[in-house]
Length: 199
Image (cartoon, rainbow, N blue to C red; front, side, top):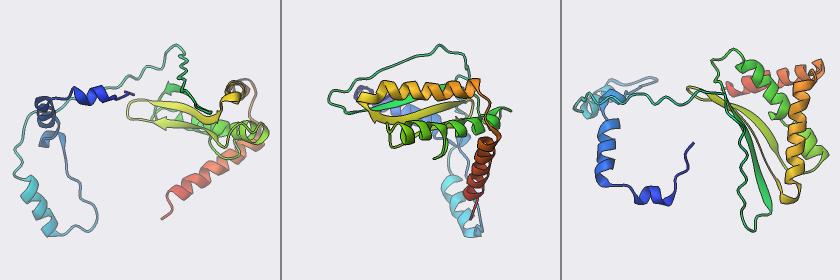
């Protein structure tokens, strides 16, 4: 991702904005989708508005985001004076949902921290009381994906919380998941999927 600062806006020039507009906002980069019971008048109105749009050959090439998964671990601490809490984010660049391991890793990520009864919640919230909530998610993007673990804890337990997060990750690496827990998570995911398409 990119972090945008005030200086980025101060550096904007009208000519560059116009140029970017002409490059991106033209018929070769756009399409209109109509869905449902579309009236003939609606199509005619759209034709009126967009049919006069001058076609341009300024088709913007697709931006290819990096898909490399090999990277050295980076640890970054951003101190904020007067803060009483720490926001913890742990992540790894991975593949997207087209990869054959996406579904199995979704199950594993759910066991780790993807639902209220997950290992991270049981350990860090229920047992240790370090946080109100902690979770892990597997995010699929167009060309890649990533796994993220996130929580907010008191500054006094920041290091202890990190230790427990890595403890749970190592448990998944070194110990087989018992059938009872696996079955529970599969049922949870099946139910979540059914709820997501209800209605």
